[in-house]
Amino acid sequence: MQARAVTSPSPSTWLKRYYFARFAVSAAWVALAFTAGKSNPALAAIMLIGYPLWDALANYVDARQSGGLGSNKTQLLNFVVSLLTAVAVAIALGKGMNAVLAVFGVWAIFAGLLQLATALRRWKTAGAQWAMVLSGAQSSLAGIFFVKMAGGTAPVGITDVAPYAAFGAFYFFVSAAWLMVSDARKPVRSV
Image 1 (cartoon, rainbow, N blue to C red):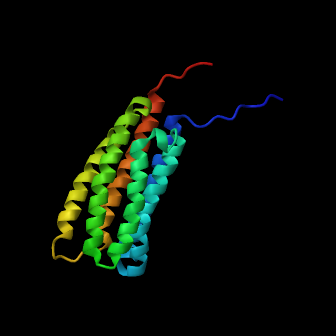
Image 2: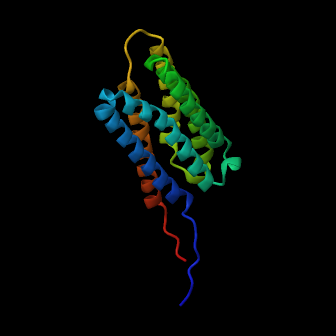
Image 3: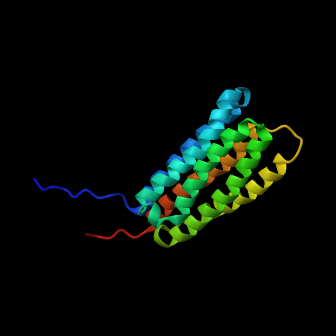
């Protein structure tokens, strides 16, 4: 019996799994936000703190799979920014949802720019990163909108953040699907 070497998944295989996982969690978060979250302030608070914590964890796991945080400075920064955002959201909850939306806005700007930079760097090795580039740019623009909206007088809630997460879910799904299509188009090498 011949022993098989244990290998880690290819960058493309890893990214497909990662992007599908990010899609699934974000889609579930959005569904919960528009159902139970909008009528349950305690659940909404937990979800609003949990969203940047999930982003921090996802960036950490992805960077670790892709050479470590030291090799992926944009993901290291995104990890740190997301952790700090979770703390800032927890503090802002005591001041009201407009303060929370402002924190989310600033986070969306920075996280979007860092995601865009990660996608541009990753394009060379994994390809098919155009959706992540668009996602990063749109995140930054949404952040500007959030900050402006937070300064207004209209009441805001978790359902104002949910479309942002929904677009993120969409882009992660498109990225995973596009990688699948890209991989299917590659010629198969014989061993």
